[in-house]
Image (cartoon, rainbow, N blue to C red):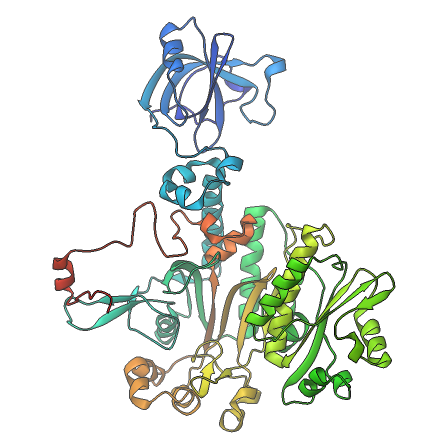
Length: 595
């Protein structure tokens, strides 16, 4: 080794020892002719003293640049009491340099390496120099936290008798899901693989094969538009089990997350986690992944407005599936016109014609729609929403799904505005885990004029609802469950269909997938299910999201070594990039220009 110690290990017990350290120059300071170098490696920092008595060392120190790599040999001495740095583990000692070897001089830095300053630098520039951005201690620690979380998950699943099995990345295309990355086959002209969106079908085949308990830290790929919590390639904790029911999955995942939070953050999270039916989540919070750390819950007024003289609300309340609902953003009465316009724009993007509201201030209510309300309606609003001075109430009148989505989004935006004003405190160290259950098995797609799977077509119906598949599929509940944390979906799964006749019925009769398409895409599954498929189920958790929540960060890019931009680009490696004509010819592809 080129060192005897790392830069975070020396203490007063090492006083008088001759040691060798190697790392990056963090800072250089000249105090009265004596030069001090803070030497840094991934473990920490040690102060190096370069005395004029050691002429060669002192001269080398003059030319040192930040982030250059140097090797230092010297003697450990105790710092003077007034110079002790209690913030550092090595803060009571320093190393008097007797020799310095410069291994590499750093070129001029494109941005400061200080965490606070670097975070303000353009993200594209930091992406181009990601090898430098990663070198910052905070980012190294984030990657180490990620590794620690992965280690805890593997240890836990190993202790539960799971077998880690790798499945192929190259799979067949299944176009009914998210957009895929296609890979041309050189050996099979005109045919393509797809990079797996998930090992879903493979892990079900492993259950048919008798593995019983499988897991994998699976790499998955989706060619979708990117955002803070989405990347084209991602990692999921993929789990499947045979001979189980939903309760077994709940207990397993709660135990796993409890272990992760304890080992990584030393926090004991309470179990079992609360459970909330999908409809309740939408009714109360307007979203199927509710953040339950704060209130501002949705209240229904449909019955109240069925006899209202306000025609807008009355017509919706008396229509099929129509609802009139509201939230009270308590304390947000000082909302600016710009903020109000922003909320209205959000509501319109979700299908609303506008955003009706009532402000309460100085003992009176103000609203363009107030003149249409009766005294009884006002009294009911005041009582059910507890309207007081300083509040603002927002309404949504629309079909149930749409009204839920509108107020769910407005609720989150209102919470942000209240937080910015210091009127709503959401502790960052509060972890509200929640199971959302009883999702609908099917959703009606107006564009395709058919039912589509709410989760995926392998989800088993709730047994009590099985007969409704023939008469009213939209009322069938699926054995699907999502694990939610602070408004973020960590993962989801289901008990699977294992009966080939039921699976075929779902494909052909309910989803109306043509028989030839079913055979080409899923024929091998139906064949496998006819050879003794066990009852089974599983779940997949987004590992990138999980560690992002552990770290208290807002973007999963912070927890990835080499993330892509929102355009799917790796700015450091400058990819995607063109390929040669020969390469295209090998895979039987011709690139056309814009037509």
